[in-house]
Image 1 (cartoon, one colour):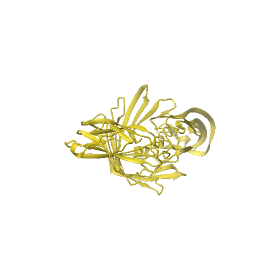
Image 2 (cartoon, helix red, strand yellow):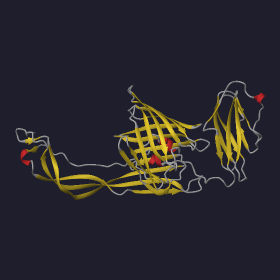
Image 3 (cartoon, helix red, strand yellow):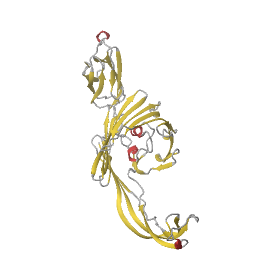
Length: 437
């Protein structure tokens, strides 16, 4: 293969620049490989290299515009990796693309890339579809989300899209979306993260604009910092800004898994449960399964710059909720009932022990079986109780009406413990996850 070489005198003379999608470094396997390099040029351009015979690129020059150049490398039979530098000349500027090819026998086990992920409730009335697009380095370049749900008898679809750019020393993520249906809300947001020398996000500037569709907008800006322990695990996230209150979230790890998050600003705890299966996918889907670990920076976690990932796959909890019920209203109470007791029946809805199954299958492009499906089923029961209560007048100064009835100020005070008198199964709460490669 031959790569065009030009002398300094042959360079295009006008001002110009080259922007390479996905960054200026590519790592390829030891096998013979054909791939593409996507870039934009603001003026006439060409490429040069230093007589390296194992790499080639076509076309080797062109006018201004958007391009996808075909990049080819021969098989590397040596055990040592090798590197080539391709220089793009555009006007008076130079942009270097470094291509590294692994040595024979040194490739990591092949893992197919996750292309789609679907999360839905058991009835399919509420479905999230995530679609992932990758750059030449197998890094996520776009992440799209479509949520389809039922609003009464009407099906509503909302859309959200993230564009991810890997820039020197950081990452820029731009998002936009809409609520779908007749609501009219639109959203734009941006994450600009600065990375440290280990490739971890040390800070982030977040901004968003929400338009309600009626001319009113709400803007939010938050400056976020991240702290890690000695093992590179995220242990604290702190944000300050306007349009939203300041916050701080502490993360708890147990046996290599992120098992809890505590927001000290709002005083709430979130806990997470894990399977025994290793978290081996090319991206960390736990950030989706857990609803973002209560973080403002969930997209950064998905692409892997918020420290070490949890060792195991988490249980999906996107639709977990606690049902409550009963018949606590007592209505008007006659004065003669104050101090007497009454036996009342009420119900509560309780969940049973969840059942979670993980399915693995052979996937083209992978040397091992990969996760394809998760099904989580939570049984629910309507439990009926009987309990004795005493009528208590909370404020003795309150007077009954002319017929001797109190319309407020009376409560039922429990006497003794409740007794379960019945248990009826309800429909289970089901979450389904499917992963496509």
